[in-house]
Image (tube, rainbow, N blue to C red; front, side):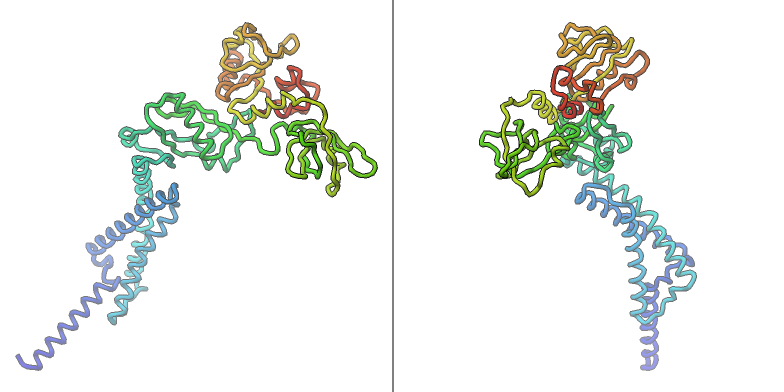
Length: 445
């Protein structure tokens, strides 16, 4: 072979090599003009976006314990395809080629590639999230967001309880309602418990978990042995200086010098300390911290107090009020108070106090005065207003039994007095002879 022929062959080989590299690097080289290569490339893009979405969903569920937003996975899937297309274009430019990115064939292929990634990414997100839920459930997680498959339920050593959606979470009538934000936080969560728990044991543990994990004050729930919820309601715990702060009263912090034996709950008087001592107000001592004392008194008396002035506290010779202590203790317990009217023809019409599962604190007879602490042999009559102390679920069953024949559970009249009518005794404590100032503390305890 002559030198000229060798040079021509070498030049031809180099040219062929550069053309191959340019064809492999240029995105235009893979277009719909070559259907087979285009299909293989699109399937590769779809698989890449799918796997990336699955991995992102797994990682997000593991770290944040919730489902990854769909827009994030779509953005990731589209981004990885766009990154590949840009990289191949830059590779073609690096070898000296000039890819025609704006040609119709190239534009159509790129748009279809991005569209495939956008469609496949949500599928990968769903698969990855479901896989994460199942894996974390079997690995011993205590709380999940989302339903478990029947297979995992069967092989798992736990009982799962899925809370209802926010719109189906009810309010306990005898408590303050829970905020919509709190309901949204606990909605559709899956809580895991050990197997072989009875319905009552599962109910107790579920109530404890919802209270401790989500800061809910009270929970009323009916749950079966296999974790199916028949009823779910929540209520918030009262906040503030105390549960017996009556309407028309105020809690005020004053600078004072209380006696050494003064304790919370004592009835006190506030006196001026100037040259002309004068009683300013009478109230109740709620707390002492150094020279500062918190007292509860009427709003009209609170308006007469001067912030910069110091007062002297005089303790009155009075014993702590048992009804106020009872209301305070009841407010922190699982039990609550309610008033239910016995309907005519109901299951409770003619039944006795000893037959019910709640504590009957008092009965306002339909044709007579209030009967405090009725005996167990007392028989309910239609129209009796019964004051109850018990758990919300027990009170709810009492309401259903007290409903008039055919009225259902909603037919029972449940009273939660707001204390606006001072002439009517609105709690069992007041009906039994307690001070009327304590209504607010017991009517919603």
